[in-house]
Image 1 (cartoon, one colour):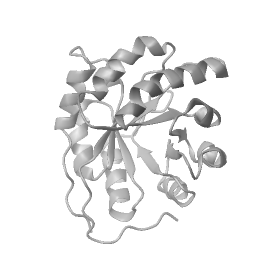
Image 2 (cartoon, rainbow, N blue to C red; image 1 turned 90 degrees about the vertical axis):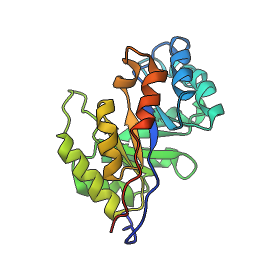
Image 3 (cartoon, helix red, strand yellow; image 1 turned 135 degrees about the vertical axis):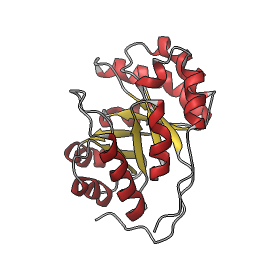
Length: 219
């Protein structure tokens, strides 16, 4: 299973992981993305792509890679592991242990392989055992359902206390960032609440960064 973490490890303050809306027009989103990346420290961008043919998808990725990667921010595709290399992305995020396992050969060892949609602790440990670079907890399912926030925090606490592999806590709103940080997550994913903020993405991400806190030493 995933390698246990030594006792009394102090984790660093988490970093932000931006999640885009489904993108069908890269040029129309580039300015908003650049504004967000310029407002705070960001570790990675999870790029969601609206359905299209393969060449169109690759062109969208390449267009936004030019915004993301020069800032030393990783560009991770939501699925689409088969185009990661040709599009010049840094990796892929797969939903569910089956999809993750199937994509590993396309990604490892050079590119990031993240895993979400983990319904059980056992699935999370399997992802870690099979080489996940991170596991994600708290994202909504396609039907909009999401575990209770208490359950998400408890899952992050469990993972942070036991395993070295990073975890990502998905914040449904800015108000969830501080408790996810305190629970011990290594990254906080922020999506719709950032892009829909009436103040604009730069102001929203600046506030998100202010909510990040350093977790306590865990045993």
